[in-house]
Length: 184
Image (cartoon, rainbow, N blue to C red; front, top):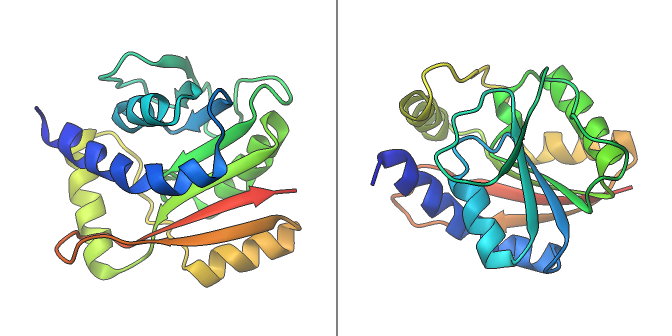
């Protein structure tokens, strides 16, 4: 088992309890920035959802339904193709201006958005960089993190209704996470 399988698998165990509150079994879910597909596969199985992954680079290690994004700003799906769009530890991998475009795109293709993101800490940024370089050397890492307050201010400016959930993690785990449910 590779390091990315272990770290991504563990991350899925943090995401599942929160998303269980926000996703119904059988819903159609788009996982933007699905990466190697480890988290996607675990969420699909645990939450019993119909999941499609997409990313700008295909480096899947798990067999999930997948569509390659042709560019970083546009999701390659029709309006309301999904019930939910999720971004799992992915928005900080694109520039802040593009985060806004992706949120607009997510609301074009679905009615709800789920975000699971790293809170910006020095330790978290260092580990994020190192682990992502192990997972995929070509991964974009612009350090476009936002604090909880910055995310919430952004959502208010965009007119989104939102719920916020802090994620508990063990003492030695290098990341602090936050999750959001967005609706229009």
